[in-house]
Image (cartoon, rainbow, N blue to C red):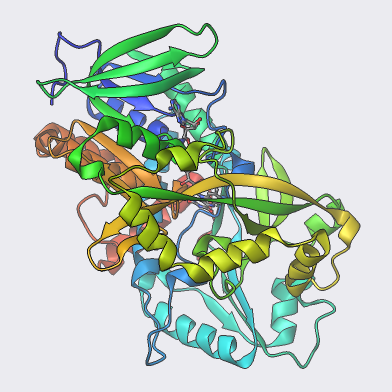
Amino acid sequence: MAINSPKTDCDIVLIGAGVMSATLGVFLKELDPTLRVEVYERLDKVAAESSDAWNNAGTGHSGLCELNYTPENADGSIDISKALKIVESFEVSKQFWSYLFQHGYMGSPRDFINSIAHMSFVWGDKDVGYLRRRHDAMVKNHLFRGMEYAADHAQLRDWIPLVMTGRDKSQPVAATYMPIGTDVNFGTLTRALFNHLKGRHDIDINMQHEVHHLHREKDGTWRVGVTDLATGHSKTIHTGFVFIGAGGGSLPLLEKSHIQEGKGFGGFPVSGEWLICHNKDVIEQHHAKVYGKAAVGSPPMSVPHLDTRIIDGEKALLFGPYAGFSTRFLKQGSLMDLPLSIHLDNIVSMLGAGIHNIPLTKYLIDQLRQSPEDRFKALQEYFPEAKFEDWTLATAGQRVQVIKHDQKEGGVLEFGTEVVHSADGSIAALLGASPGASTSVSIMLELIEKCFADRVKTSQWQAKLKEMIPSYGQSLAHDEALAIATRKRTHEILGLTLI
Ligand SMILES: Cc1cc2nc3c(=O)[nH]c(=O)nc-3n(C[C@H](O)[C@H](O)[C@H](O)COP(=O)(O)OP(=O)(O)OC[C@H]3O[C@@H](n4cnc5c(N)ncnc54)[C@H](O)[C@@H]3O)c2cc1C
């Protein structure tokens, strides 16, 4: 890769000013302060798409409460491997943020991360049995230790009065309670990272600049075509490395790069909506993120949750997300995004994924048909005494789920995130949505290991990585002493609840 080459205009181009580009930019400038970095963002604000606090759930997806990360096996046992991977990734994120705070790169941790208990809540004998078995399986691992389980109405009323008041006392219910959960404002975090980057040498952040073209030169460098949306003026930037961190806009740019590794990918957009509470008395009575079970056929990211948020210093209460469908790939995108993304090399994947996801299609149609009263009924399952007039509907962010080529099925719809990179490591794109921002640090580390493989091996980069992420290269899921010490350290630095 042509890094630090006098022939190029810059070493690194980051497309998009969301949490992913921010994280990668900070990592790279820490690893090599001489890198010349240019950021291009089509909007006039940083973090205005998925990374904005009102556009995502800010859960700090840490595998503690999301039931879709702990599926049930055919024999009734619970597979916790996905939750374990996510909780470990979130511990890595907290280490990176601790490093940034300790080095004065950002203000108070209270601006972006706050302790909020993470809970799972279910009703009905079948789901109560599932939750009990899930709890038994999880607490065997040290990273989930301290998670409490209760099926007793009185205990649950103590934890979540809004959820329990007015509920039929004969209804079998159960919940798990994990006090070390967090709420993260990824918008504030992203803005803090870009503010820090702005103050460094050799970094240029260009707002209202849309990338429309990518061309690989014979020597492996890239020419990036950009239009200044304020003036209409276009230019080309010559660079050694490109990161496509354009959120929903990543797929069309990956297609434009024409790299072999990007062939066969498609995208399926799923939009979201929240009910937002504006009654302060009600907001004050709830202090937890309460996640339920997703309806049959629904995508995992539409798991309903009654969610305490801390946004710009204010406590808020949200319920949702309700899934929706739009052909836009970005909240501020074009209705032509989906049709224009379909090409000869991904049509088989798209059709295959469509044929094998009829329940999802049916679920989305049902969601689109919902009246305000239907949406309110869904809220009342979690908050029986909710009042219609206390809530208003707002649009959340847009997610583009990855469709991947599959030999057997033609194409499969994936709900995770995917780093796609060229064999020479000169370009990488991030596709998909969940878990996203919470695991942004691990995702960007993986990208650095793949695209900067030679430099990662050097003693300087190894030492710096260890300084930023002291557990780097070791397993927090398997090393109990390391995991406990790491969590204690980061929670003390970030001022978070510790048990
Ligand atoms: C409803 C919802 C709930 C979610 N909940 C959670 C959660 O609880 N926990 C979690 O970890 N994650 C969650 N996520 C996912 C998380 O929000 C994303 O993974 C994360 O914000 C993605 O960051 P990003 O930087 O890749 O993309 P974005 O924040 O979307 O940034 C991409 C940027 O690229 C810009 N751009 C696009 N195309 C171009 C172009 N051609 N040229 C220049 N700029 C361009 C866009 O304008 C945008 O600013 C949720 C997402 C949604 C929608």
